[in-house]
Amino acid sequence: MSEGVEITGDGFIDRRSYTVGGPKPSVERRQFTNSHEGLSEEARELAVAIDEYKLRHRRRFITFEEMLTVIKDLGYHK
Image (cartoon, rainbow, N blue to C red; front, side):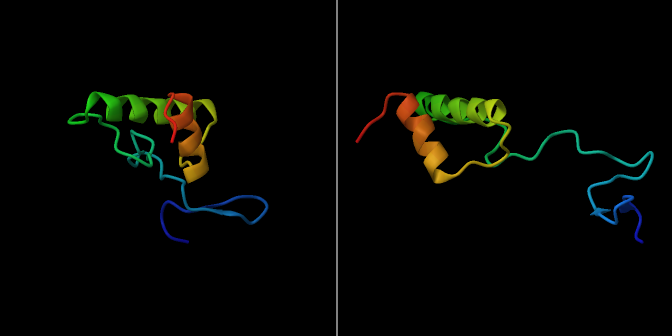
């Protein structure tokens, strides 16, 4: 096997494993950028609300339906 790949007892290949002493990711990958710099106040509010939703629901990525829920929860309507 290649370096950094681990096979568990049940035969599952865990390609997310890291070698001992090797670099580990310092930040979790996100669907959107981690920085809200350069956003308007409304866009920043939406970005923060989406980040909070993802943390609360333990989701790395959200669907359009979930995004619509966040937008409606902020008070926006058609």
